[in-house]
Length: 475
Image (tube, rainbow, N blue to C red):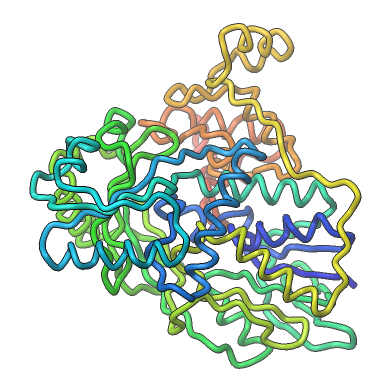
């Protein structure tokens, strides 16, 4: 019997597994997809919020501010792409100005450092490409941007190095109460555990429903985005928000950690798992974005995508022991990414009611990673001398070498798909979106993992690339 089974390996599950792996426990993570960070974690605004938006006294407020601090430390320890660039919430009329004042008061009550309400002149001096219609703005210097899937992977990899077992393609279909714990049934076999942590994201209410009536219901909400080319990455230098409303924090314009510009999202009810973009959604995002930044060049768009938020009937995060030894981490909408490491701390306190959590004398809480494009000329020459595969660039847009891809494929949590490689070393993230490097990455995966090329997928199960052969080659 395992001590703890964690259901889901998005940013919440990965943080919980990471902390638990530092303790003397037998630990397993059950992930329904074929890789980590396959849900909301990989398709969001990638913002580490400062913490002025949540109402004072809520878990959201407390955990956002704590999580902001912890995320910075995690990214430093695990060498994950992160930039503390600050955010601006723009006011365009009197009603917006009142909202900015309320957010400022919220932030002060929540302990957000460095908040300041700026005049029109101060705002435009900081961001000259903003609309001249702006009247004032809330400045939060502690806000940041991150690569959320990269952070999720780094945390999960460290957990595995510390002894955590990771099972993919293992959606939990049934949960039974047994002597001393729970039995979880999945297509890959059953798992017995003394404690279960439900970090299933959008499906958290359904997973809890397998053992008890959930205290909340997920109401999925879709957000659609534009990702613009790096030529637009300097359009703004802070995260640019509009005033929030009942549907969320509004359409933002922001640099990304990789030098692109991200624009979005909208907010529309959707079915679970519906990540299709729509003409109506994209048109709305475009219309709203130019209110903040009139000069956004949408002709330089390189990709559209959508993510699904775990909006719910609960007004706050749900962090509870639903039944003895069954922990629910649900209704984790924004600022869930920002709050994730602090949510994991709360989860461990609940787990401690059932188990004695004794920290191991030694554990992995950092990682070293070679990013060829970030090396000095001398370091690049040395890397190529030691491993000639670093001398062959596979992804020209992002300068990703074959050496980096091969390293990922033989790592602790190796990818088996084109997009799995993309999330680990950025191959295919550039202007051509894998148009040039995709076939080469496909070949490398098949070669290094000994896979039939027809079995190499684009992403999730069913995303087949090759279906057979013609006279001239593959289809």
